Image 1 (cartoon, rainbow, N blue to C red):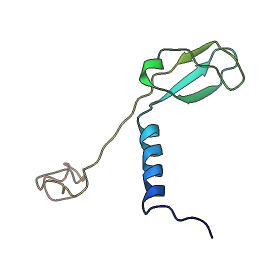
Image 2 (spheres, helix red, strand yellow):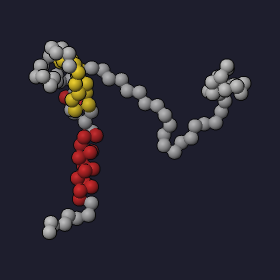
Image 3 (cartoon, one colour):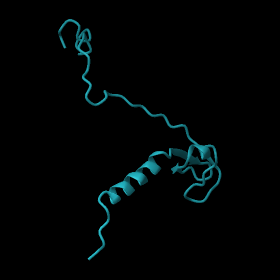
Image 4 (tube, one colour):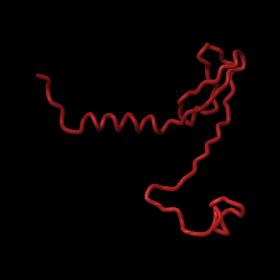
Length: 96
């Protein structure tokens, strides 16, 4: 029989590992030698350091990645009000 671990030990280890990964941003790079695009997870303090591509080339450039987030926060409802339905006038006349 295997020795029992205290309750929650595995969960605590998983949470700690996730916390370490969540705090490290992912940067996207392109290799100038072979044209390959790749990602590296590294601390912000190393963000300007060059990355080595998976093929072993050192001539890389960090790409600017844009992120777009939209939507409502959980539990919030869309405010009631006019418009936005479509139709001939954007819904203001009741057509859409």
